[in-house]
Image (cartoon, rainbow, N blue to C red):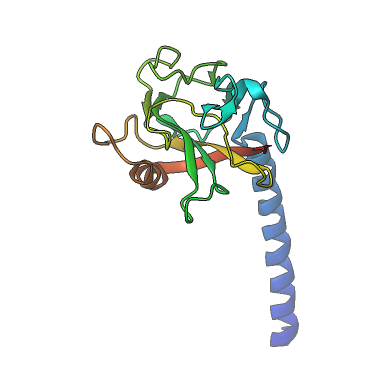
Length: 196
């Protein structure tokens, strides 16, 4: 019989080898089913064009929401929620919410350019837009203060484990964020920039 130290050493090596095989297999599966979000109108880490910039508050953009598409959500997904946030807005720490949408049906895999109209006419059936920090539902484009460094605009799509979120008629962005995060199975995101 081997001394304890040598035997323990061999057992550890075998366990490590087995663990490496398992991790390797999980890594391949994780890569094959990676939840992703992208836009044909915006480049990740690129600049946001005037087409999508807010029209008001001194900004003169067209305020058209960008197209978004996603793939490979978690298999248990029942619906999606979209949150678009500027963490750099000078609001005392809360940032600025530019677009909030919940109850996006699980059958959806994209939003077309302009889907974020305030009247909801471009939404997938059943989807619901929440009031942004501009005070109205729908897309509200970037409009940072003049002279600021370019702000970050983070687009995050959450895969949710429920078909609909139980929200009051006019919830705050903070409540929406809390409810979305409490029901999230996973998220995909990218960030683009705009400054003036």
